[in-house]
Amino acid sequence: MDFSNIDFDKLFGSSDQTDPIMMLIWILPIIIFVFYGQRIQLAITLGEIKKGIKKLEGYKTNSRNELIEFVKINMNLEYDPSKKIDKFLDYFTIMPVDMDPNGIIAKVRHIVRGREDYSREHIKSLSPQTSNLELSKIQTLLEIASSLQMIYKVINHLFLTAKKHNNYPLILPLQMILPLIIEEAEAMSKAIPGFKMAQPIGDGIGPMVVGKMMLDTKKESIAFQTVFSETMYDGRKLFLLKAEGPNSTVGRPGDALESIVFKSKPDFIIMVDAALKMEGEESASIAQGFGAAIGGIGIERFQIEDIATKNNIPIFSIIVKQSVKEAITLMTKEIADQAVNVRLQIYEMIHENTKIGQTVLLIGVGNTVGVQQ
Amino acid sequence: MFSKEKIILAYTIEKCNKCNLERKRKFKQGDYLFALTLKCDSCDGITMIDKIFGETIK
Image 1: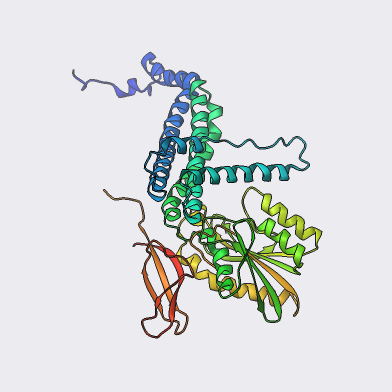
Image 2: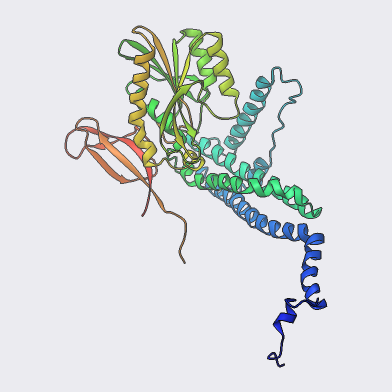
């Protein structure tokens, strides 16, 4: 073909006369985008989401396989536990009705603790001679694997529903939250090796600080998986409380506080915990504040706040800021190095807010995996 | 070819309760914070695990 005699002015309509070919070139895409624009956008977005879902599926499968392998090796099982593990992973929790919120905390506590007790007992039944440390590690790995499975199921459900109905507005919220969900799922997936080796995690900074203060004191079990001891500091009586390490557990500080207050009411409560940092905030920075610093579903915080309010005990908190990933994976050097500064701030807080002869309760909040006392 | 994954190595810091000598070594299974480990290299004190943390290889 000879292209040398093409008149570009004519082709692109720069001349005054209107060219029907040029009209088609401009009008056709407009018509396509008016009628099919949303579908094209949906196809592009679905493609992006599918990539994310593949990642989530990878995390889910990997966590399940790692759990099965860990159970096989650490519980010395001769049979394949895959079927039982899959059954555990599929367990769901139905939260109580919240139309009438009165008394809902007790119901939530009952259901959550029932689930924890049930899974612990059933894991133990696989091999009754397994140590408490190994059991706690398996229980944490099971929680991670079932959370990753649930995340994958929900996201995949939303994706398939939007795809089935070609519903673009339905896919928008999914597109917005998916990067955040992938970040959390990735953090959970990366936490697995640390829990398998019982290494301290970022969330363990509270138990680390209090655990060191508990050394050379007489420890006693005060609530389920929770230890207590007493010491003196500058004329003040110090009650120390943390989850029982080096197991992977957060203990039950709410029940422990109830027991302590029943025996001897403290004048002041200090809670030390890890807290999620905001974007732009420096990791491992320390902050002080008021109120109960404790995460989770809210049942422990409610119990602590309730007891403190009824007994008129002020609650102060010291937090060490970190990202989600840092909180559940192997403790970083920056966070570990802050333990000394947190301890200094605790002593300063005690000096500033209490008098000689008073009693202070210090709670190290968080998962105490790899942290003894 | 070029992995974006950062490699994090776990380390254990042992500290002597008597002479405060610190020794950094690679983490090994069974290391827990505040566990008593070995006799100190420079005195007759006992070392205790003071820190366990992860460091990114640069």
